[in-house]
Length: 437
Image (cartoon, rainbow, N blue to C red; front, side):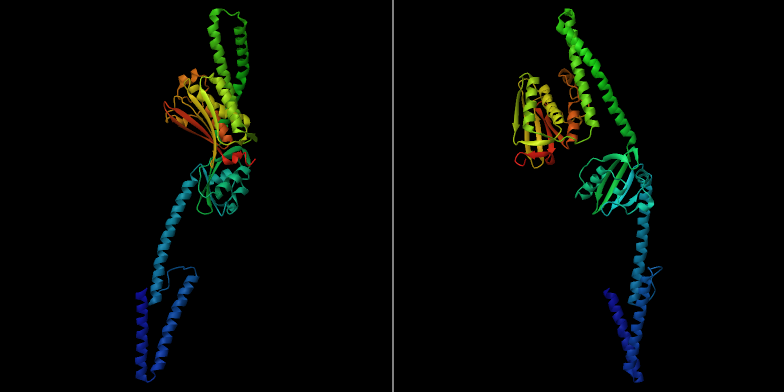
């Protein structure tokens, strides 16, 4: 830029000196100087006007050619124009590749801007959400009106960081027989990406599984009740042959175990099919822990030292029966897997993160390899010991579903041979402290 300024200033000096010398030879040096400078100024203004017209016409074609400072500026603009064209072509090419690749996806992709307005979507999303070409710029909630999705989307749009959150499952707009799974991910300032998946087949298979388990479990209750009744009658009558006593006892034990399994399967089916977060009971952790501790002592037969520690009394908003099932399952597991005389501690504490119920035992412990799979149905760390203790393999699966319905989670710490600690973590919004009640 400095070189251009020096060059233009030198050109001005040359014109001024040339016209002055020419004026001295004619005797009118000042007229010659004015005429020369006027021509120079007119030339600069004309070049400026040409350049301005080129800019006003959208910079179509190459920049106007000239010399001097405006010629240098035109050359710079021409180089910038060529570079811009190349970058624009490159971006267009990348955009086409992205659009072509997303068009081939079976999952729907919707780009949102301006706090939830439609910016772009691929054909799969258009087909699943019934979007048309002229729908761009409209809010997505105009097309997906389910209140659960509206709440889910605006929660994600308001989040300052992308926290882990489960996708939401809901019927497709205008077609209740089709089930969609939608996940909103925010990026940038007001932009978001919505991933839409058709999970109708998985949903139907899962529904078939739930219906099958529920129906079979329900049908098994009647024959089991009949068998248990006859066995109890035979054992109590005293008329059964002596060599039948052991088989009848084993049959009674297995009938009780089968009845427990059926009851757990029915409970799981109810937890899966009923609406989440439906309980509105006010449950006192202190009272619940005392009741669970009494039941655990009965199961233990006074073979364990079971203690209750409650730092702060409050209430949990939820389903009283489901919370009792979750608390009791952890306490009963501690009894089943702890050696005789081993201490079992039930704790409740409240901190800034919420409320925490924990059961600490002195049992066999769990290898860290097994911890991620503990809540799977029928998963057993030690199958032989679990069957001896009468476990159904569904206790922790029930706990998991109860926690999901109460927006809570479970953490496990364990050292093989030194016992385990199972902790249920409830969010603050589920608690009401005694001081604020």
